[in-house]
Every structure is written in structure tokens, then in C-alpha cells.
Image 1 (cartoon, rainbow, N blue to C red):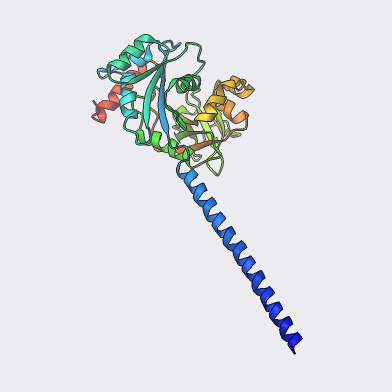
Image 2 (image 1 turned 120 degrees about the horizontal axis):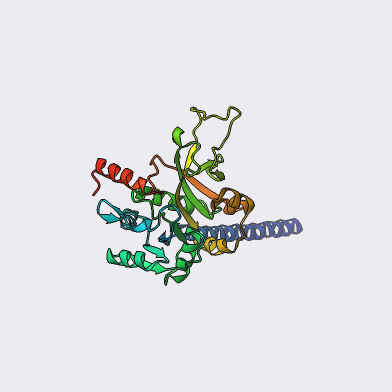
Length: 296
């Protein structure tokens, strides 16, 4: 009996010891998971938080030279764009990036911060990248705001910033709106198609998708790409080093270089219309629209 008693006691003690070890392991795991979760959530809260808006502006233009300085109801167009952009709540800082002293002087005159950039920049994205490198502070997201959008909606700026913040697998975000049937075959109106998760599949100057009838399908929700876009700042530093791609060159659309290199682009749909200034004739249209909206 004493042997049995001793064995039972030993077994009980062993079981208790094992249970205690298991308990300690589980407790340790739980603590580690909790610490890891807190660290992850901490990173998530800080993910791409610092945002700068950059308005690239150049004087030379084949279709409309000096466009940023054209007056719209008494103010230079670049000032109109800057004032509208300042209303966005997600921007920590807003600057104009230009290679022209006349534009720079104008912008400083109405209180904008200006970064001088090289004349060799091929497009707005490269100009934004150069401006980013010259800024004293570091930013996580760069918003490329088209200088010829004097009626830019601040909500669109905030929308694409939040979309990029919520999509860690994307390096780029942009916006689309409904395409008007009369713009279906206008090569200056860039079309976009997206997948079921809101990531861009393709951009084109032609109508996409295209059907067998070669006509506009009034039932299909075609989408028009709006010029505004935002980038992860680390990707923006990589972008100029990427070689031009066949689709980019054929369509003359810089977004395609991003997609052709396998990067993801998040797209949001908005209800606002595009009101860009491409030619001198567009100025009168913008002014009429501003009068209708009582915008001074």
C-alpha cells in the first residue's frame, strides 16, 4: 500500500508539474500574442500618417502655355487649386513644385510654399518625387494634385489618402467617376477598369471595356479617371528608376508603368465631375460653372 501510495503521490505531483508547465507556456504565449498585437496595432495606427500634398506646375505646355497663371474670375488658376486643396483635412502640408520663376513668384505672393524643381522632370510624378527629396520633413504619403483643377473637391483628396492608408498592399491610389457618353471616345478622357476589390486593372485613352458592337453601351458603368493620385513615399522614390514600359508608351499614361511592374493601385469611386482646364476654351466653362455655384 505504501508503494502504491507513493506511486500515486508521485504521479499526482508529476501531473501537477506538467499542468503548471503547460499553464506557464499558454500564459506566456498569450502575453506574447498580446504584446505582438499591441505592437501591430500601434504600427497600424501610425501607418502612412504623415501626408503632404504637392501641386506640380510648369509654364511650358504644348496646348496651353502658361496655364497655371491664367486668371479665373480674377485669381490665377494655381491659386484657385491651392485654396481648394487647403480645405482637405488629411494634408499635413501643401506645396507647389515648379521649374518656373514666374509661377514661383506668383505662388509666394498668395502665401504658398514653393519648391523649385528641374526642367528635366518628364511628368508630374517625377516632379513630386524631386520636391519630396527637397522637403525638410519626412512624409509617408504624397498626394499629386493637378494644378489645372481649380474646382478640385477636398473630399476627393481625403478619399484617396484614406484609401491608401487602408490598403497596405497598394503603393498608389486614385479616383474615378462616371464617364459621360459624349466623352466615351475622347482620348483626353482617360478610362479605367477595376477588379472586385477596388484595385486598378487597366487605364486607357480608348473606351474600356470595348464591346462587339463598337458602340457605347448605355447600361454599362464606364469610369473616367480623375487626375489626382497619391503614392506611398517609398514607392515614389522607386518610380523614376523604373524603365518605361510598352503599355505606358503606347497609351502615354504613366499609371500603366505602375501596373506593368506589378504594383497595386487602389481606386475609389466618387460622384464629383471632372473640371480640368486643358485648353484656353475651358477657362470660360470653369468661370460659368463657378458663377452658377456662387464661388468667387
